[in-house]
Amino acid sequence: MAKVVGVAVALKQEAFALFGKKGWTDSAGLLTRAERAGKDLCWIVITGPGPERARLGLDRLLDCDPQAILNLGVSGSLVEDLNCGDLICPGLLRHKEQGLDIDSKFKKETDKALSSSGLNIRDGVLYTSSWVLEGPEEKRRLHKRSLAHAVDMEAFFLARGCLEARVPFYCVKTISDTVTQVVPRAVTRCVTRNGGLNVPRLVVSILFDPGLLPHLLKMRDGFQRALYGLELAKATLWHTLLEGA
Image 1 (cartoon, one colour):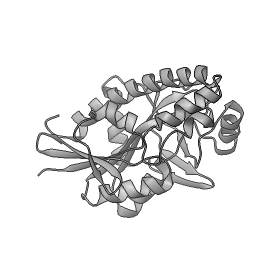
Image 2 (cartoon, rainbow, N blue to C red):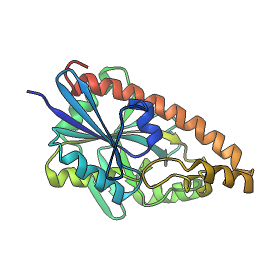
Image 3 (spheres, one colour):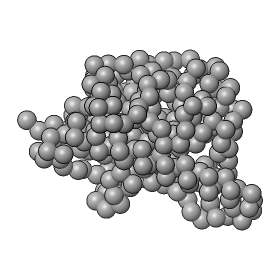
Image 4 (spheres, rainbow, N blue to C red):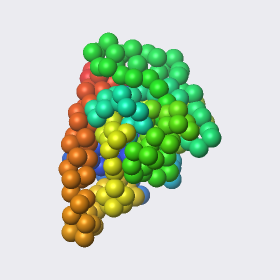
């Protein structure tokens, strides 16, 4: 019997690197794509960042009655020993004072498959923030308060929706910026609500503040290393979860 696996990705750059730029359909403001693996089907949605967009994307995935939902994407490190390109597959998700334990049988089996393929994955705590953390002090404060190892903007809300719908959930994040790295809000504000990049706004930001350019180049390098880690994880996940991959 054919099965459907749903995939939520926040940013277009992430999704295009993993699945290519062609074949996407705009459906009520969400870019979606179907990808076959043998007789099975992967349904991918680019959600955009943040809780509201995560819930919209999740609702679209749940409409397809998936056997499981994956969240693939980049995250920021909150600890010294997580570097750009490192993989974290968290068993605990936090948002504010709330926590979700996703250390399920499905997670254990998927962790084993990734580890068996030679990938070095790390368990731990992922904190879902409502905004981008700009600098080292903010990151270290969050780690001290939450004991989280990395931070993103979607996973907690996706996992909570999956828990409510009784659909297995698995999260793979790769580190795109270290705990010591500055991520200027002038740059991150150029990310659109649907996960794209407002290039004209980014150019204007750099023209008004050329000091942003070194940070932008460092962010680009970290992002590329993170995408490579995601590509490796995605290849293993396809062989594990989808027939004929």
